[in-house]
Image 1 (cartoon, rainbow, N blue to C red):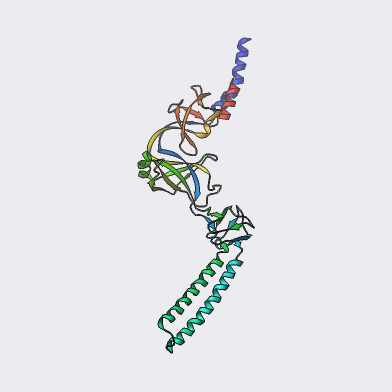
Image 2: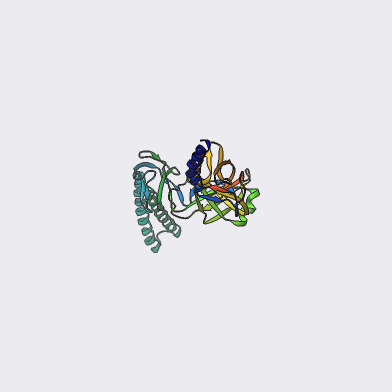
Length: 327
């Protein structure tokens, strides 16, 4: 009777053993990959501008708010230009008067009724009045704020009805087509980064990795922190990436051999990380591992807990279910 029960138990376990053996696995190997130096970084727009007022006046029109898309030449804001217009009208009246005086001076000089010095003064007054008209016209034109390039409004600093003055920020724009990542490189790593000038950018919240178009290291070192700013340029027209986002820039500094495992094969439980390793009988066994840095979007370095040529289950959820069924 005992033999029959044992035989039935073995037969009932066979489907579960087959399920374990059917798990998709991968053999971990030492592979030569790029050795990188990771640095925390922030995304910024290559083309960005904060437009400030060049005259004093109340904001009487604000056409766009944060998030609006604008085209180059679009009117963004208008300021009350009545005072500037009155100044322009006064300058034009002075110009007309100065021109008439200059014309009279020319005739009087021809008839030798005035001196050359008097004529020169009339001519200078006319030129000054003409310059005042140009200056007043420029001040009037400052009342209309145009978009300098096509982009997105990042922030509107001045609201409708507020008073604007020279130098006060009105609106900020950025071009979403061209983005770059700005990171700080310690002085001791500067030579290695400059040697390769290659980098990849990791977006931790999405797991996305993007190859940089080029890396630019600025020629000055901060005197207090002794770090150098590096700019990592991204491909154009990337979706879902905005200025201000936190990213991680991985600067290539050489080659190294690492034991890699697919990131999807790693099971995380709180602070513990592990993988299901296939034993000699082809059954998955959970094993704790210590992980290093991510190498790419699909691989991660294993520092301890695994050896080369061991087989790891690609799907830890299925492996865990198969192990429970066998038990």
